[in-house]
Image (cartoon, rainbow, N blue to C red; front, top):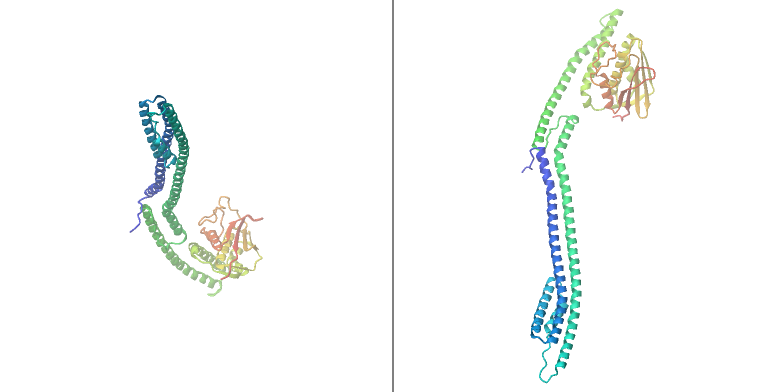
Length: 480
């Protein structure tokens, strides 16, 4: 069974919002429920305390009234006072029972007071032959003794009542604190659950966007061979499908481009190789003796053939540079310069250019072919943009772990508005070019990419005496 997928980001956000809101609603519900329970219990405890206190006060007052009623009876011997005494004693016992029921703890003092009240009787009238005064005195003494015991028991009940009320309030306070602690624990757990849920939902919301960003990045950097699949809302899945269609189209275009480059390389280099071979044969006078004028024409053909081959190779290298791997080796810099200058000797002589070379580094370890391509384009640029009779200065030195090469030349300075764009593909500065063939505008771009592929840099810098100077920095590598 497949996991539910929202139809849109809006639906995903709404679902996530209500899902994150659920723990907060539970927290509010628990809080309201706990506060309600706490309020009910406090109300019940408060009512019990009020009832018990009122009963205690009434019992103290009724005991005094009962003693006063008994003394009235002794003084008046009224039968109605005796009946009233019995009713008040019964009500007092009922209040003692109510007080016992109002409080959670049992009191032996209430039991004793209730028993004393049950045994309390008014003295009977004097019998025949009995002295009335003596009988009255005896009854008064007995009542004084009994009420002394009852008053003592009443004070004990009052003390117990105060202790029970304090205990009841402390118990209520402890129970309220326990409810608050439980509520705090529940709220902490719900807050942690909410945070975890928010993190999970944030990851769930951001995952398809991150996947889409990752696929776009891979599409631009890691090639076009992997397929693109996006999970998440249906609209992002549809976007992933469109991106997969774009990848396939780009992959097909890339294959067609590579096929075109293979064909163009063969179609251009094959006749060019024949042209250069024929020019070399003429220059060596293999078909027969040539006059000086004819030799100069042949040299022009040879030089333009070399320049045309360099332009073709630049165009091909520009399209395949990112896919090439480094092939580092140890080589002699002097031999590399001799090889390069040999190709430009005719142009140097024809334009009467003065070239000085100063190389303090004998050997270096790098990708020789890429370094040669960079230097070839820099040297071609200097030769083509230096006017007749001008100067070209090449300085090689080691600075730290880098090989630093400055290629400077005289001529028209590069305009300030073009200084930042000279390395852009197909951009040509407004400076005047004097070479035999119009440039393609990718020489400096190829030179920079070849050196940056090795971790180096190529930049336009100031020179102490010459208006144009390109500085190439190439780090040392380990030979394969």
